[in-house]
Length: 131
Length: 64
Image (cartoon, rainbow over all chains, first blue to last red; front, side):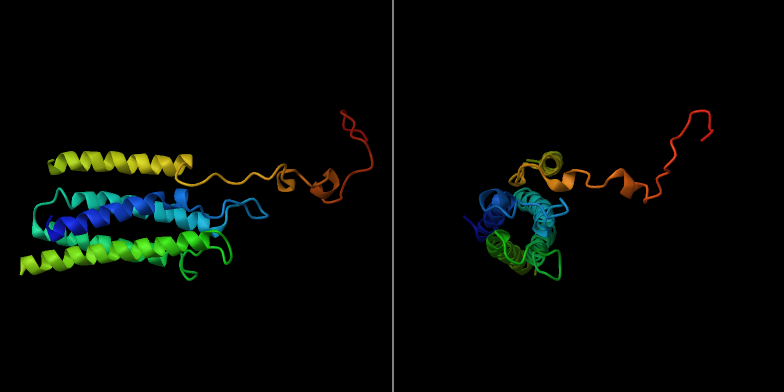
């Protein structure tokens, strides 16, 4: 298996893991006094959509043939990994201060970091070849 | 797999994912804690009308 395939599979697997993470490690499922969901609900709805995009881009790595296209896809995966880490931060979308979603955020931060590293790896590999 | 086929498959996956968000199957269901007080109307008719309830009954002919 080439290094490119290794990074591509790594990005795909972690994207799928991020997609199903709130089912495996649930966020807070209670409602606030006014009947609306907590902020972690909205954060993880957004995370799901970004993870869905990451799954599609990571699968595209197996279809794309040109170096430029692979480079751009890897770069967007790197940005998506950073978005996954940024979203639960209190200055972005935020999560509850003391709730079950803290555990989910811990694992989604690890997943986001892994996704960003996979994207960076693809950028590094294809950028080296392109030169 | 050609790029065109991949794009069709990716679009289907995306629509499926958005449908999952709409249906709420991407997360655990919300906890339902019995009857919520917040769903019942706690306002009486006096509060709704701002306390300006006419003491005289309304007569259909318009004569009080």
